[in-house]
Length: 142
Image 1 (cartoon, helix red, strand yellow):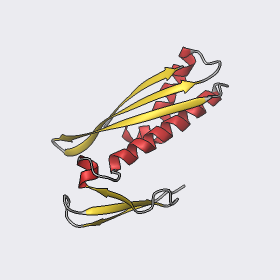
Image 2 (tube, rainbow, N blue to C red):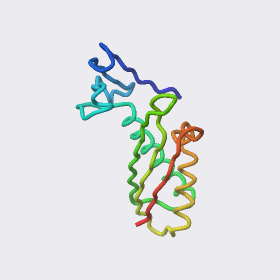
Image 3 (tube, rainbow, N blue to C red):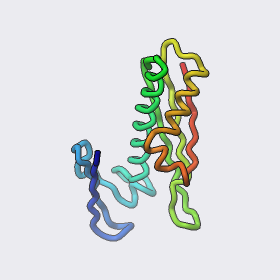
Image 4 (cartoon, helix red, strand yellow):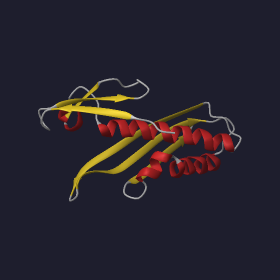
């Protein structure tokens, strides 16, 4: 399975602007710029897209883990916060915090915690970052 996305950029770093598109068409010529990345400009940025990808990946993985444990989630909601910091090596994603709230009828806390940790470790986006980024999880069963 291959998925693609593309970016186009015009101009210098601080005064330029670009667009991001995805193969599926969900994103089509979405604006991004220096200001959308490092200030409050209108548009998206790579870190926001990584956060969306990680939230989606983790949430699907958690659903899979719960289903494997014969538990059917009523709802799973996840927020991913990506921390971009300037390090000696340059700007680096140093931390990702996954915050999830789940309604899972019949689940006990121990089973839920086990499924959440397995999902965090096993989702492809987590595995992509596991060697150089701190990934933490705050998972609540309600």
